[in-house]
Amino acid sequence: MCQDALAIVTDDARLNSDICQNGSIKGLAKTVLPACERTVELASVTSDPYLYYEVCQSRSIDGLTRVALLACGRAVALAVATDDIYLCYEICLNKHTGGLAQIALPACRRVEELSTDISFGEPVTGTIEVGGRSLWIFKGMAGQVVTITMTGDDYGVDPYLTLLGPDGTVLVEDDDGGDGKNSMIRGFSLPETGVYAIIARGYSLNSAGVYRLTLVDDTD
Image (cartoon, rainbow, N blue to C red; front, side, top):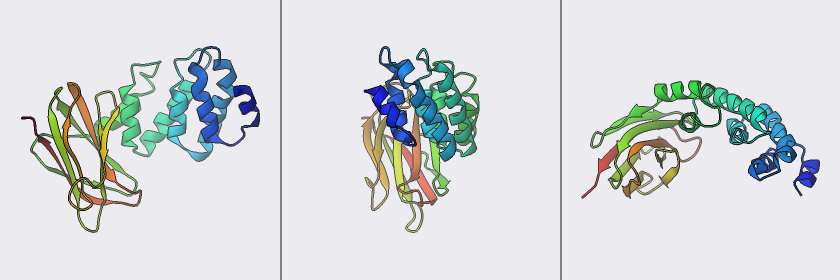
């Protein structure tokens, strides 16, 4: 079935990437290798770091390591060049897996440069450029209940919030949970002790402007 699909796939980057992800199934690494290589070729045309990173996920699979690590390097280069703080952060979180340590260093350095600590009860302000995101870091405890609020002005950014866990997993997102178009993640219980990340961005790619971000400890 996979071989039939590979025979007809030409410029469909998404289908090639989906086939590549099946490399973890026993005995399929050699079969899906052409799809992985094709995904890398197509990603170079579109300059899509996320396509590269999808192939990068196969770096620990025998037979796919070479092309996957090539994709990892290109994903890092594009993420850093475009200041994609979300992808840089995810790559850096996985730096100890599958030979990614050295390749991930530029992404980790960019995270350090672009991210900012946020403290409980101390509102901060930031600016989002068109298509951009801001990354805010805080330390939380298992069972701690937090409320995060992002507000924009009437003519600027339409706020959108994402909370990432210590492993980079998306825990919760919100668009209009606050007043009007403002965002609020209300009363969320942190699942474990560790470093959490708040991604602040506009709802649409064209949304930009100044915003205010507040982190509150609502633990009883």
